[in-house]
Image (cartoon, one colour):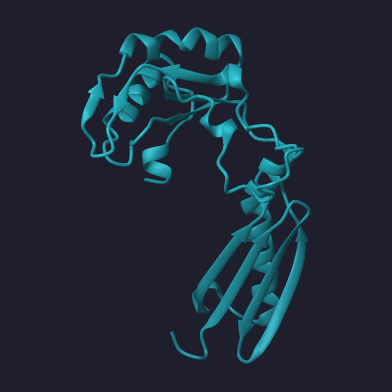
Length: 197
């Protein structure tokens, strides 16, 4: 990339999408309304406008850096999809119990935020992978299939699967996903071993 190559920064916020274009020693900025249903539309519209104002074509942009607060806002405002969590039996409350690394460690009156997935949708599945990836308890495939009626009754829109030690061996998460996908191919399923192994 040469000094003459333009650089673009884009930040999609809940209300506005901001663009900043550095080109030819000048900084061009633009603020457009975010299009929540299709956030990319605001980016593309803003991109056309800011490039035209700078007299540049898209081919002259050497790098684009993108950021967004949409996911953070969805978490804070609890506006995400209704999600169920399949987890190793015996550990469904781990996300709610937390650890001693909280921000107010000695505040015994601390009100912790409610978990993103309520307890009734944290579904324990008999299975266990050891820390070195060994199978300690085979996946109960029937238990995975048995959660589908509950998912439908609760109108769950997505499923997260987070089994213990899946970073060492994701086989049980993959098998559980495949079982659910056969019965509900329309259901988005996220595996912890793929998101953050």
